[in-house]
Amino acid sequence: MRKALVLASNRWNGVMEVGIFRFAGFLKSMGYHVEHANLEHFITYLRGDGGVTKRMIKPLPNRLMVWRWMWEMTFRLQRYEGLREEWDLLMCDASPLVYFANRIKAHLKVYRMNDLLEGFGVPEVIAEEERRFIRESDVVLVAHRTLLGRGPRGRTFYVPNPIDLSLFPEGGHFEEPEDLKGIPHPRVVYLGAVYEWYDWETFLHVAGVLKDVSFVIVGPIRRRPPFLPPNVYTLGGKPHRDVHLYLRFSDAAIIPFRVSPLIESMDFPNKVLEFFALGLPTVSVRWEAFSRNFPEVIFYTDRDGAVEGVKEALRRGKDPSLREKVKRYDKEEVFREFRDILARFT
Image 1 (tube, helix red, strand yellow):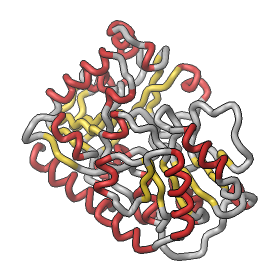
Image 2: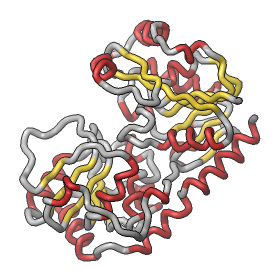
Image 3: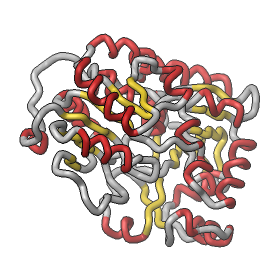
């Protein structure tokens, strides 16, 4: 049986269902034995449950590991034996794990460029390692057309992040999650990680003006403001199989990002596919690529525009026809593209 190693910054089967895990699933369906490894801070490593992920340890947060010798020691001291094996296929996403990917033997190397890595503020040593991995990869798969020019011609392909529409069924009877039941309507939901790219100022301004609207955050929060108004509810991360319930029982969705090179490099955030799959009217900060690809979104450029956008979304209500926009990103469509590309190089 052919063996594939997938290196990614998150845990497989965790609360963050990132795109590369869909491609790992594709590899399994193609007959590969797939293993996944990630890096975790030593406190998280000691505290957390490993699950199916081969969890590896790093001594400090990425931004503090600025010297090459620190990454070399981090690589050499790992107990995971897969780092010393030779794989039929190695796939790595845009994360500091590119340092590891450059030191693992594989017959076919695939770089899943899901984001603009430098946009995360990684140290220069990791930026250099990414450039090396791009040069040495057999295939570069970019999640956004804006990234196509960053890979070598003839080996770089646009393959968007897929959505599993079966996890967002249109009909049927579903029970409302217990932690949603006490939250009054109308509900405006944000789904995903709340990290540095989240625009708390705009979000809290909107919540402060629209006091009769409940704003629900479903996802892990890295830094929580010292005060949240009573109409803001933080529910934490949820298993991906349950995400549709939180969207299904909401009335609109919001994407309050800070515009930055990282955000502007995206054709669209993946969460819009999940919102549209269930017909949720969606409000977002505007950037060029996103507005061009999803004109159905209600875009804003300032805080007052965000307030008016939420009002408009709630006025519109749910629109089941939005699901049609999502179907071209369904996992079966994307899998065919992925399989055909790999066939050219294996």
